[in-house]
Length: 337
Image (cartoon, rainbow, N blue to C red; front, side, top):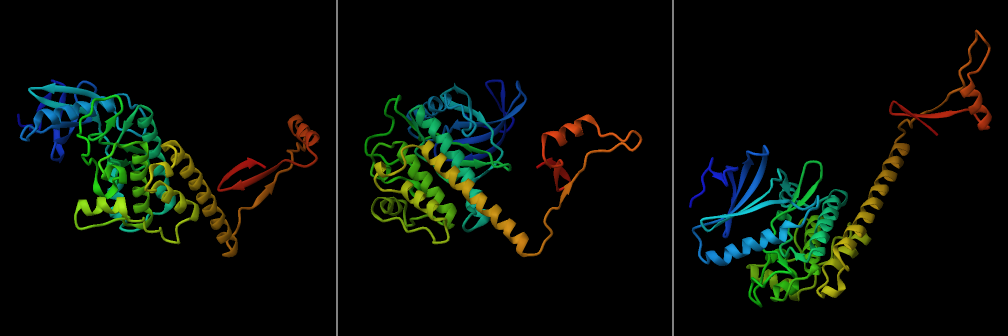
């Protein structure tokens, strides 16, 4: 069965345009004609070998995604099979991926711009891990970032659940070489710490403008994750942030952060501190550059010359406080001091 534009799936979902095509299937932008909303449709390709095993993997992806309701995870709406073809009906995320943003910047990203995406990704991963689901392919291309900074984790196609039957064979390497954890590269079972390592590689790439390991082949890169020490981050990176990212990239999973929630909390604290430092630096720049600082205006209680009286609320204000009521006027707005 060949999928074409305009085709209806389950007499409800219209195929509008093909977004991507890979070794296992293809992804379409579709439209739910019942609810009137765009959707993403992932369909198993029919011209591939090992059709049954790939269909089992698609079913596993549906099961693993079904209960992961979280703002930072792209939602699964429905799974449907027809004539041996499986369809995943998912939330359509009209956003750029973090990989796109890395490519556009073509260099290190500002930590205060990168950290919110990492924090949200860690939160989504923690929810997945709490349900026994390991993503196993955390990478910038699977982290979608909207224009307002909202993150959605996508593609649980090679995810593993502790509640599912074993799909991949023991010793089989699953993941993307550039972001794979050392234990995955050695064919061992992935754990939540494996996803944390991969997120650490994403953080490293964002802060440096390049990945920690390169090689002529994916095998060479995977071997480097296992055997080579991680090159240090640039000295310009905040020390605490640098140390924590390096802990995420520890070779031994036991030396990495305890869980993804810990990652989210620590990175969030670092983000707030860096933002505070930026604010202080901006304030200092305004003073040293001679720019006028916002003026303060003191307002006296209203006095009615006709009756020579002060309104009761103003009298109360004078009685309750040893000073007049002051207001700070900034940017056209006023607030009580």
